[in-house]
Length: 393
Image (cartoon, rainbow, N blue to C red; front, top):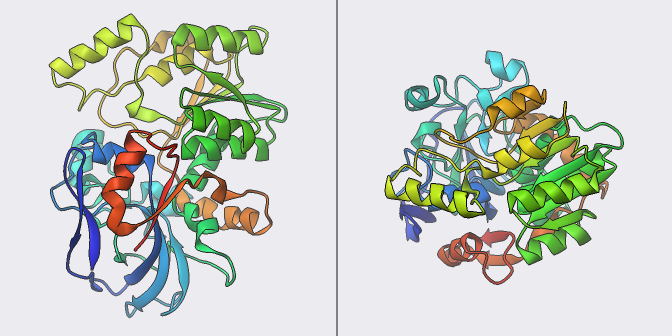
């Protein structure tokens, strides 16, 4: 089969590899019909995430047709059309039983790698490197899916792939981000980053009762989409002083009730001090271990006292220069984590089927899998108005 493989920083190639096979009686083999490039994939593309090895197959947003199932799989059969969550869960451990699916204790066969860095392991994940199990990803023609009776969501006939593909990650991720912001009826919510997750966080904030949504970015096409598709007010700046002053003006000095970081560790600082810090990190080769907490810094300073900070943006390693004292003294509540996908997929499918959310509005670049390297370059460098790349094998 053809698959997209990683060979180093900004070096990905579509190559022929062996087809996946059933390795466990609970497995299924999925023939991929659509797959997407996620912002998290860009962390891997830029060598920002540990334990990726040359030749690994990337991709965790995918859906397709069931081709084969293991002997213990009872819920799926050959020919079923499914969306596959990027997180892999066993369905019966302590964490799955408590609806904390991304913390599954049994689905990551390389848990010791994560324990060394984080103390405990997350669940297994598709295409995220060996710290999350080393599972081959979905930017391929076929994928092996473990615990097939637990994760994949069957899709009704007559619904096109593009409408439901993002149930694999970014729509649930945006929704959980809004939920973690503890939005109360009429709240003002600020979202840093208007990429795909940010766009779905904006949509979800409205669904949860926000009275105002303010979107912050500097990429013109993302801001325009936040205004039109997201119905948000926008701030065209990441400069910390400008963002703070503007948010205070817009909220009569209170600040937003909830703040969502849809950027994560790829944030870039603005201003002289941030440039110096970034330069020093680069010279010291520390940027692989130290994230860039510029959005986190802004959120702490801007959020209303007693407000809520939500972090769907991915972080890895350590952070420095975090104004933790301000967060403590302002009584801010933080909530974060990889998305508990299995909790959200079915309810959000209902919203799509009932036309409460149009998930296709963010797609800007439908391409063939064979052009995946070009798609990564477009998305990474924000060329040609690229917001979301969707690929067909």
